[in-house]
Amino acid sequence: MENLVTGVSRLGIDLTSAQIDSFQIYYQELIDWNHRINLTAIIDYHDVQVKHFLDSLTVFFGLPEPLPKDFKLIDVGSGGGFPGLPLKIIFPQIEMVLLESTNKKADFLKHIVQTLGLDDVDVVAGRAEEMAHLPDYREQFDTVVARGLAEMDVLAELTLPFCRVGGYLIAQKKGEIETELAASLNAITAMGGRLSGVKNIALSEFTDRRCLLIIEKVSPTPAKYPRRPGIPTKRPL
Image (tube, rainbow, N blue to C red; front, side, top):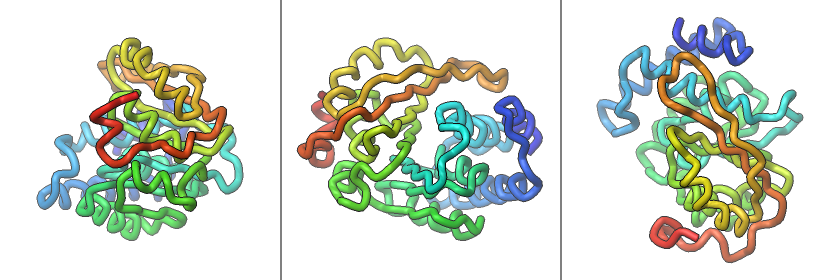
């Protein structure tokens, strides 16, 4: 895990030997399960360290420091566990929900959580459009994270209903995002959000532009949102 160790040191994080072991096991299980279900197209040892593990941990730049006690985070569209699980390995005090709509991927997430012995991680198989209307999840989280889930106008509707007022959405984005961001401001406002900032990720491991869009939840999301499954994607606000 030398590439990961070097990269996270630039984030101001020093990995313990136990954390390095956890990432090694995570990699091995990810590759093993990937032979059976489509978790990721990135399988090279170096690339997984950088493009999955390190990339996930750049969310650190958007988290409060120090993390408050009982900090609750939900990873929407978690897939292979990114960015949620790498964050949990580094910050075990986070109370985390991994939300994934594909049952087979959710099965992998349950397996890796158990294999790594991670506490306070709940894997939920379900769609964001439905889960965000349930009292146990609606506006219950200090931070919502998402990576590669959707364009920002759709992403806002799928994620901000989970965020409590005063909390934040951290959306990981790549490339030129100005047009996408401008087109999403109406949706962000409709969900009770406000653009707080854009944090560019400047690490030599990444050759493309990567950034975090930080959205503050400033008012409750109207009860009608999110709309029923599939509608946010078909008819973005």
